[in-house]
Image 1 (tube, rainbow, N blue to C red):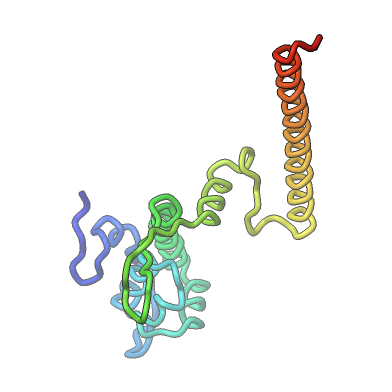
Image 2: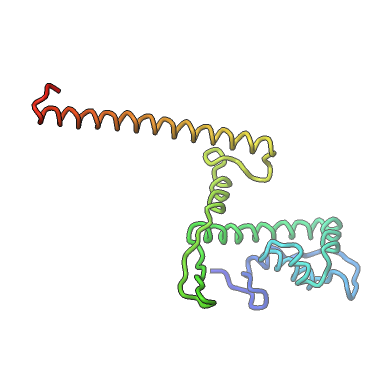
Length: 192
């Protein structure tokens, strides 16, 4: 198990992976010191949010993106931090989709019970990301026209499946009804 850095709450492995070394910057009292870079990258690795990481490090978003453009080392560490955040975010999404989260049920302003709420949309997104061939590709790279086409095709397949099921259901109901009528006729002494 990875040891946690008590000050930041992230594992030592993540802290080492996102560390920046050899970034040459002008030394300023309000600029990107090594400590600020470290805090930014650790916060980015935990949250995946540049704005939050900038706030934690005491720097503006613009300053963060400017440093990213200027320093290939910092940009590489930034990308590694986002990679770590993505793994954490996927784990949280999986937990919400599959394990659900407890939601309070209020009555008269008081919690009277809880219920577990699951996220079908997160589950669908995780499934599409895991196997786009099987579950469809509906991510950000899909155009509106392509999305509409996919939805229309899915609707048409669903409608055709439902129609086939209804037809089979009607035929089966008719067969059962005819059997029952024949049985009734036989009991009543009819010829069938």
